[in-house]
Length: 276
Image (tube, rainbow, N blue to C red; front, side, top):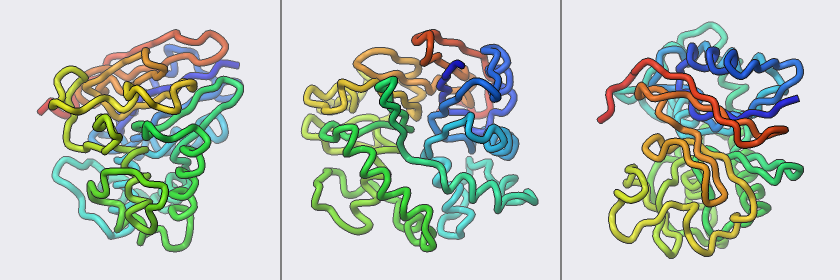
């Protein structure tokens, strides 16, 4: 059995199939982790959702910000944006089943035997892995509950920026969601910045990649994430970044995690959206 992780697919079905063929993935024996953002921007979100869902227990997916946005649009609490390519999902006959499946995906996964975690964007520097799992579960519980549409209507926004364990209500859930699905940079004090999207080294003064904060408490665990296409493939600081800009015309990237860790495979992707 092999375990692979793959970066953000974002509706790029053909590159996904090509990459799985390249690594000889077999859902009857192998396992696949996906960093989230299965949908949007690319042309084939419906096909990606069906394909990954039909892998059953062989595929583990964490939710990304575009996945949550699809759920919010479908729930009628957010409009489609000009660059969204989500309408085909809403129009397909099996959209209810697909969206229900997506809504029940986790926000965070940790594998003790590999000492490896999976998240879409990142973790707060003050969080331990146990705390990250517990906080992610708070969001998962609401998202899977009867009043999930209320949560989806409240999740948008960049505030609060500073994590406190005593936060409550929607601000607490919003910040947990933003940290798990949108974070790239933060201040040395851990305040979240959701505006800077450039590669490390080009960010405004006073901002640090979340995984390079000196006091980061999850440093002893390998963290797999996506979301950050300008960062690209990164294998340092105890993390592996896998978003290599598939829908920008970059590549879709996989890394083998077990039993031969550190083996990266890429396939080139046709450009769906022009950078900038």
